[in-house]
Image (cartoon, rainbow over all chains, first blue to last red; front, top):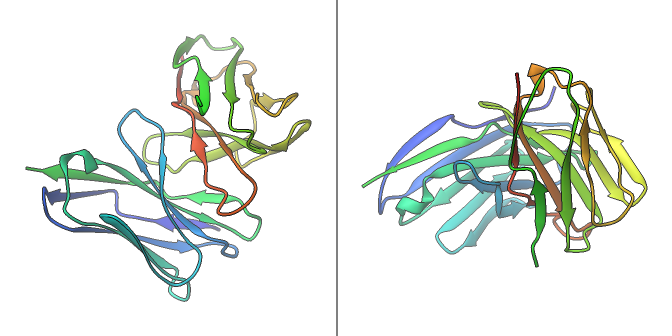
Amino acid sequence: GQNIDQPTEMTATEGAIVQINCTYQTSGFNGLFWYQQHAGEAPTFLSYNVLDGLEEKGRFSSFLSRSKGYSYLLLKELQMKDSASYLCAVRDSNYQLIWGAGTKLIIKP
Amino acid sequence: NAGVTQTPKFRILKIGQSMTLQCAQDMNHNYMYWYRQDPGMGLKLIYYSVGAGITDKGEVPNGYNVSRSTTEDFPLRLELAAPSQTSVYFCASSYVEGANVLTFGAGSRLTVL
């Protein structure tokens, strides 16, 4: 079966750095996405990786290793507004998105 | 641009009732999707459409129906509502080229009692 694993919940301190991991086993691979979802709101797109390596976008970076079936989302200089759930999704060989359950990130002052 | 607009935001149904969740997008996106999101679980695809007049089943289509008569609109019909359909429903759309990033509507919280 297809599976996306990410931690259920993480806690970090304002101003610090946090890394959210995502491992996947899917039928084929055509890209990995990270979305942010604030409580009670819709997911919004953060990043997309299709080749191995690091993609940087401001305070957020996303890394992909296709051989290891592994990605992480790195958030720097954490702000209170970063408190949200972070969803990892992989597009499989049929171009269907398989979603992880999300990681709830709690930021403490 | 309004993006993706979903209505209603909240609805309570009795078992056996039917209803339609409305979804409209104004970005001229080819692809449209309906997902449901349950606590502790990843988004599950119900139905999707690659263009007007074309729809296909996703992972969890039972108990639902869709139509796509125009590029803009993609309503989701729930027939004979059951408690298992209590969930948050998200409509999304995407452009076929590039990374195919999804733009989501604000969501519709449905409770079936």
